[in-house]
Length: 268
Image 1 (cartoon, one colour):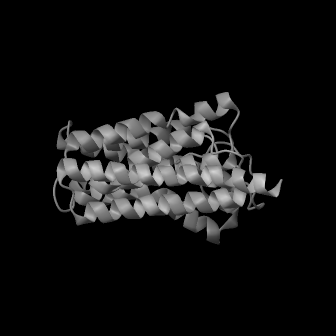
Image 2: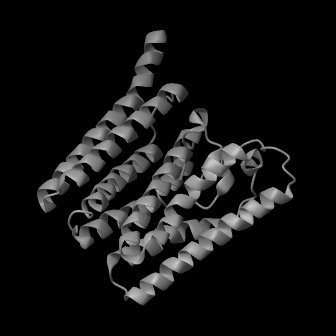
Image 3: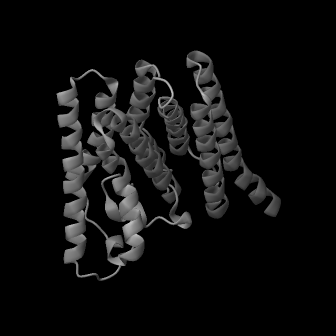
């Protein structure tokens, strides 16, 4: 029985190794296609290793019976985000093909609406999948904000770093870990961030239109975080509520900070 459990625990970890291998293949294809420089290669390799290491650690802690179809979709998204990350890092040395960057990002954003549906339809929702999905979303927004910030200014990084700033603040102010009610507005604002940054980074809009669009995205995100922080403050610092295990999202402060290693995972 123990041998069977050990064998079953190894299967999901083997899938993360396959994912790391596919990530390396994607980097090799990108490097061959555009002549990617050292910055792009190094950043892509670091991303691939970090993704593999974090997932492997989480799987060892949770020991799921299988990796699950929804997590496979999210892993595919992570591989695309790794490619986008390498291209953005390479853009500091030379301009990458915008169409390639936009294509990879668009597919990653589209698949963001797939993994959650797959998890629900197959009954494979988990804390691991939700955290994995959320981290991929958050990191993609961070990378896109870096790319767009190169043309519009460093202020765009506020979009990508706001979630991480909230995580840091919640470690000092525990009341920020309180439960938040569901909100369609919050979900909409979160989804708009990636779409607006993608459009701004595509170069299809005039400079003024790009500036207005990204400023609007930032304003909406500040409003979303501000509204939720105010709601948590009005609860009087009663301490963190019990986690619900609902899907995590970029504009949802409480759910962005509570997931420790034991909560890692779930649906999108």
